[in-house]
Length: 201
Image (tube, rainbow, N blue to C red):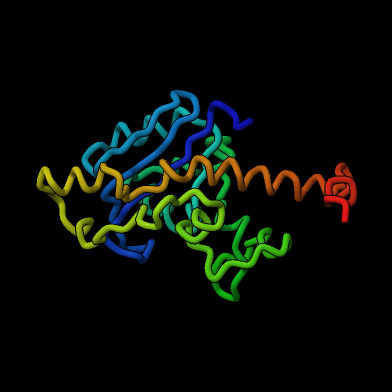
């Protein structure tokens, strides 16, 4: 069971460099409110209030990308765990392999459990877990985020089924992945005997 004070979030930006990209949209799902949120870059105070009101923050590549950009946008070190006592989980760090120069703290838990993926994109993980019904979720022309104003049709595209943010499909991914990680830790600590849960031959 995920703690009620948990916020799953993602952002969309006008670039891929966390040092220069600007936040355009902030999407989140709150377990406390059982509600999805989608704010554009003009709604700074609402974004800050939403983050402030949750203790547990979950994202996908959020530590290296989403959080630095969001903190620069808010002009606030809102994710600083020493100051805010927040608990932050980056599922990308849990699941993907470490690299020499980037994300050296990654755990690669999927590989430890003999789950082999071609890549560690969220879309690939959704497809592996059968959470992506037709393979089109997330498909959008990302040039749309280089704009500051959007037509009604573009806003429908951003807010609609081809969502630009991960929260709608991140919730089942987060729950499934947290269950895998917890089971992995319980096996490593000796609380679960793997032989007792394997099917008989």
